[in-house]
Amino acid sequence: MRVESDMKLHDIQFSAEKLYRVIKRMKAKMACDPDGYSPYLIKQIISALADPMSLLFNSFLSVKDIPSSWREVIITPI
Image (cartoon, rainbow, N blue to C red):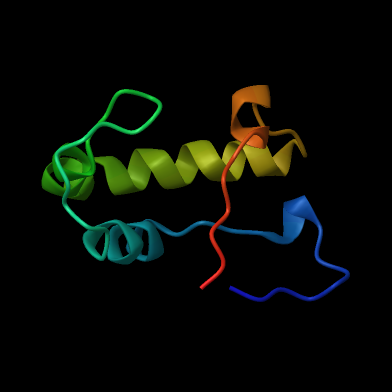
């Protein structure tokens, strides 16, 4: 996803609908991610998780802080 060069963390919003669509497009492999959850499990329960996840993500961004473990990510260009 491309963003404007002047984009700030507090400008970003996560909607439950967007999270739901993104998670549903994930490959449903059984291997766990670094946090210990498999994409298959997340895909199965995303309808219950989308709203709380969007609230959590938006709250982190509203205070302009991201948990330190989230700062170490692998970004794969498309």
